[in-house]
Image (tube, rainbow, N blue to C red; front, side, top):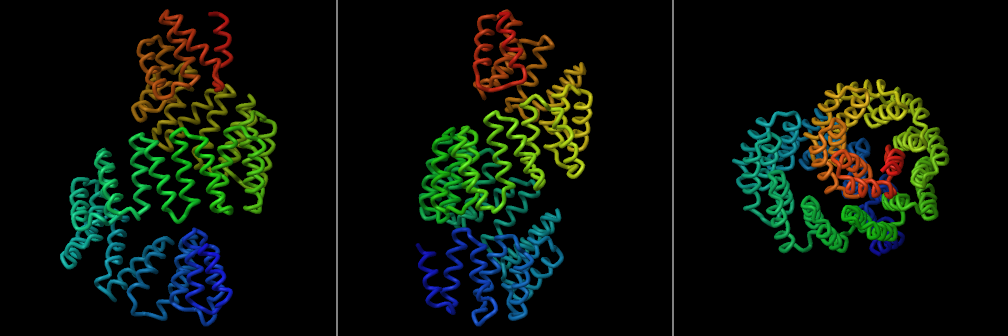
Length: 538
């Protein structure tokens, strides 16, 4: 409504700086920075080319990551106002975002020279030292300035951040508590303090802190977003959803807030609620692409072909390109099990542009079709162009494995471990391949390493347990399988492995129960055919 009103005012008073800037601000508040740029640029070169218009243009260009254009306007302001500390500070931030570090430092130093009380310039100079890894220099600089500007909250908070970067969490906590004592109603300080408490695994204290702030400052919607995140870390997903419902009510950017709510509802297992929230986001802003993509991903997961195709058509119209639409159609038919169709769409998408989602979708389609050998060539071509794409490199290793080229798969994983280090996903996948090759000791070593890194991951627990089971360590394996099923009771592959292990322990009734549950599951897993054969034998 406000935007409609401001547009009418601009139509009536096209030469009013106030009307133009108000319309631009309304568009910026709704996240439509490109439209704000168009409104402001229309008057950029006439009599309305005032300071206010330029500053709004800088903000809009910055939010669209067009730093070069923003810097150009900031330079014009500095030429007009060479003694203004704020404009030097503003261009310093833009230079930093544009990775022009020497220019950024020079601008901040000039800003401070023009006004030695410019705290923002002081903070940014300290941050540049921190980024360079010179934490002691940053701390010394900040402490010197704090002696001049006693009890300045921003300086004390920055000192806390510097200690945190230095991994001195005790001093980081001490200094943020000093800031909090100065003003417990400063959300920036509360946010920083809650993050440090979270790092110390004091989640309850962090929740209480933010909850108290919300009670005292009910008009600060960002605090609701913070407490929702904390609730999620406590696995209190319903409380997170409740906080985010209130956040949606108070937020100006309804579409963005509704998407945040939808993601929380998904974590809480409420797919229906998430779909409703995405639909509301589209109603709030029918041009907001992330809402359409979030919704179509859910309808694809639900195998709703008609609704998905309708959404994909809308996305194609919005993007004025069918590249993304082709990938999404590939995703849809992959979910529907129509691999011939999904492969066709992914190949068409790749003809138009290099899209990672398309190459990975193509790999999954061939694998699901039982034709992993056909995935090898396109995956290798992709890696020739993008040699540092780890996910595609893993897909190639897995395709070798599915094609029974175990030695090539093992060599690929070994090369990846050498290149990227002992990442859990690499160790876990390599363990399975090495076991198949008969390299039992190496397989156990890799699986144990992966488990040590990620002891809560169900796939990693299952890999280690399955290796132990096949080596005759059945009791240890069962303990691990039980742990995996506590975390994901519906996992069909874990149930199959559990059944085989229980049978080896002569616990045949339990074993058959788990085997039937694995077979009856809609989930597919590599040994499903073997599971059916085993049930006939039992």
